[in-house]
Length: 164
View 1 (tube, rainbow, N blue to C red):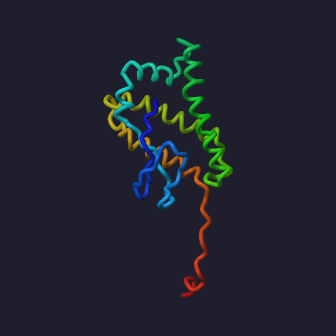
View 2 (view 1 turned 135 degrees about the vertical axis):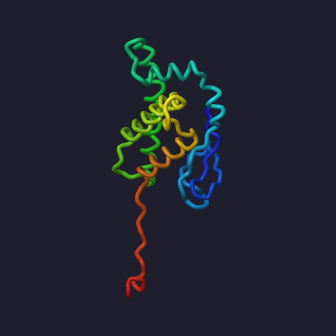
């Protein structure tokens, strides 16, 4: 089940269809942010599921190595592969920097979000640890995409603007 509801322009707020592969607003060409049904995600994430994910993320693989391997292959590794593929496609269209290593970028994004899952679990116990989920996802994706974004050529100013 997907909890992705729509894409939203970071600049003008225009909504876009999440079923269409796109990353720039058709109105103002600003980056699109993924919007999720966070209440649905929260409802699906029981304390027991979160505890299992936390154990797996924290690396307690020696307790259940086969389960840990299956989880890695089906969860983080699969997610990183999808993200790396999207980065490669964006590079071929000139939307992302050609020198960015898509596999490394994807792993950093996935591992960072997994670590945030662990931190969020202890947010009630540690002051200043938890961050609002929507803020966390939006900011993480914006920083991630900004780092990948291809440089836009700057237009030269007319010579009359350079005269004093």
